[in-house]
Image 1 (cartoon, rainbow, N blue to C red):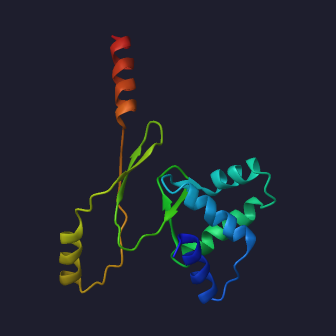
Image 2: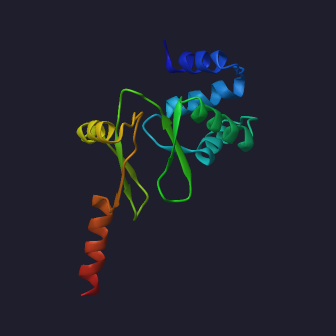
Image 3: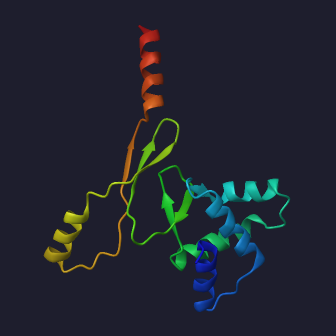
Length: 152
């Protein structure tokens, strides 16, 4: 079953309609799966394709998809919500560059032992987690070094 079909089935099962704009927005999310896109970025892509879908529809659709658990809404500290497809079996973390705002994914999940310990000690059923690291990417570190060398 494709991710588009899965989204359709989840929406219909929860009593929501499967509309053309929802289908188109989900397709864009899937086409940009490697990125963490914002509503504004999706809207810009739609505009470039001469789509009639408005920004308010993009926001409403993203909020609905997050509510039903198809996507995750992420905040990387830049005042802009970004979205990624939810994958219940896959945990990853994010490295956010405070210089250029680049976001990198860390595929390893080293928190399983910590989760188990928290669940035992607090009798808390953890359903997921998000971890963000802030710092400078390699390119911004190099640029800062070059600026520092020039100043001397």
